[in-house]
Length: 272
Image 1 (cartoon, rainbow, N blue to C red):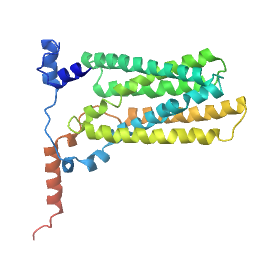
Image 2 (image 1 turned 180 degrees about the vertical axis):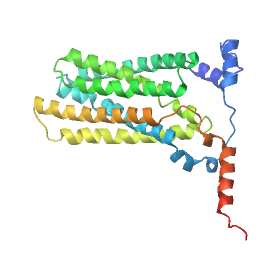
Image 3 (image 1 turned 90 degrees about the vertical axis):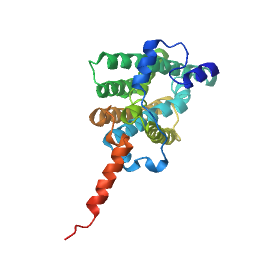
Image 4 (image 1 turned 90 degrees about the horizontal axis):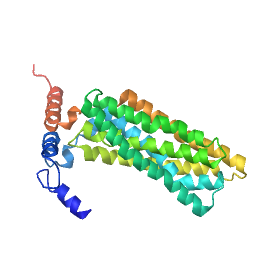
């Protein structure tokens, strides 16, 4: 790992096994970067940008359901499906193998669609968002309607596999919107996603507080997963309507500075 990291971080001209064609692609597609100070980041324009806000919201919505499963899936398997603590922990880890496979598969598919030029970059991101949020929303809720282990585990694993498409929907979208400030965008988005991870376990705890009996617990878990499904649906649909894969004007610091100067000039009193 250390050797691979060193080779990759040494620049695109380093000899790390890439073909000449791959090096040429990296040289053409890599955006020249320069250091910038915090005061140069156009926070006002970022936080009023419809595509950026849509991506932040998608990140938040994805985090709500993801962290709910991450923290509470073993509890669901124990209370509703009757798994003991040790086996439920092992079984609860299986969906994350599925999401890992989804990460890889979605990256391959989205890259093929983009390079084919038959689908626009924006539409590729929106398609991935639908696969990452819309399909898992129905699959997750459906898994609570069964009492048998096999359908529940099968639906959850399929749901988590499609959740892997989230990486090709919003994580890389930050680079689409602003190669220069993608780190800032990702930091804001990660904060939104982590905030959702604080909320969803609280919702589950509130719903399950004082509930006893298998049927009562199953109904409460249905409500919990229904809340995650609704949040996922909202996230995917708003991104389809408002999201974008185009680079935003505020990515260019010089353009932003010129716009700011124009705004300042407009505020100046008119000589008479």
